[in-house]
Length: 261
Image 1 (cartoon, helix red, strand yellow):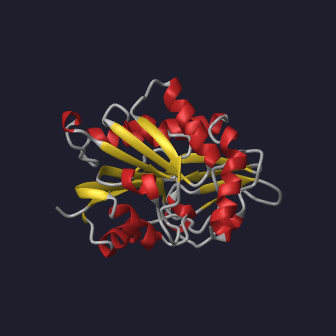
Image 2 (cartoon, one colour):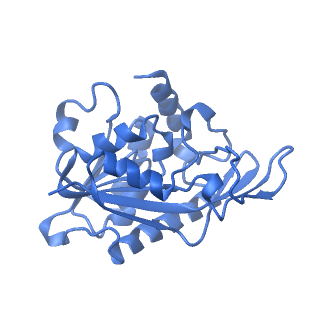
Image 3 (spheres, one colour):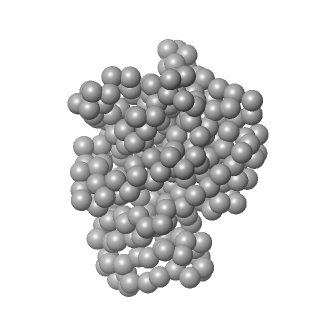
């Protein structure tokens, strides 16, 4: 495991129990779940009929928010996360919610050896692979897209939920924190990076590799991986993240494309 991957694993193990317990976190994930469900209903995410079987890969699954948002549209789910703390909570949450067709395992698709053994065999032929708020942590977005798309069945969807870059986000706003004055963004680079861990801890900067992704960036990444049928939609209401005494507003998006048939 690389030093960066190990840092991320330790961070999320530490933050797992507080990852989604704060009021702002609950609101953020409520917004995200609604946006995911709307994206299915308005056909941005054109899933197969449930009667035909719909297999979800929830990658960087955390506590299972994406799986829970899609549970009425899928027949089974595999969550994969680098953090065993997150995996434990995911499985507990699914059990408590009586979602018997979903489970998570510890794994790292982006490591040099990739997935191995039983996990490798399970992680194939997905109807949809989804990354929720994890993409900005990945060192190599192009490799991430290629590895995830290789796990899709022909015609399968790769969907990513993240946020726009601060310098291209009309709703970007940051306030609070020591010596940090309230300001809006109007298209000028700022480079502010933040995370979405617990409000009690600061997310190490070296685990965040990207300040967000634009529509054109996502389109290019998908195209480079040979995916087709690109689609992109942004959230109307900004996400509010609270970290280290600061409140930051970001515009969330879902980007999707398909593996060729």
